[in-house]
Image 1 (cartoon, rainbow, N blue to C red):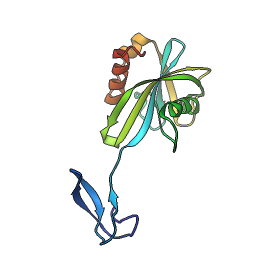
Image 2 (image 1 turned 90 degrees about the vertical axis):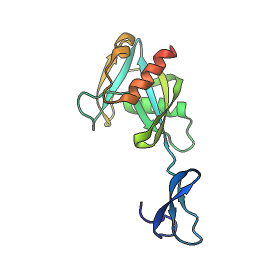
Image 3 (image 1 turned 135 degrees about the horizontal axis):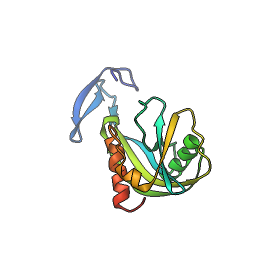
Image 4 (image 1 turned 90 degrees about the horizontal axis):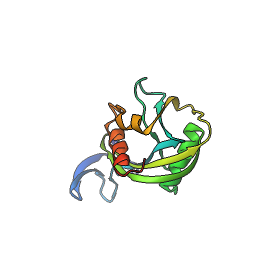
Length: 163
């Protein structure tokens, strides 16, 4: 971002609140880009006794992960992951148990993770191209490289005995 979205003046960097922020250079304009993280929901989806990992259409063939998505305005995170489960997998979510929240610094996102129990028949939407069904034991030893954050979330779920 090079120009102020409020007055079109140039922007500069300045220390505000203990961090470097992008601010407008125009007198009287108070624009500050706070660069707040974007909230994202993530779900380890359980179907019967198995867990679903899916591959995004834009990813290499060897990368599988949880279901994720952005919250809609005014939407509760647990409702959002249940909606994403239906949109992306075609499954009806029965419940969403909170696992924890995690920082994805590279994308400036706050991931709010859940275990989602669902039923139905898997029908992938256009965002996904493949999926795997894993037992708890298989999930526990699954190699999530290069998705270290996914591995951290699954490990946390296993430690909490949520899975």
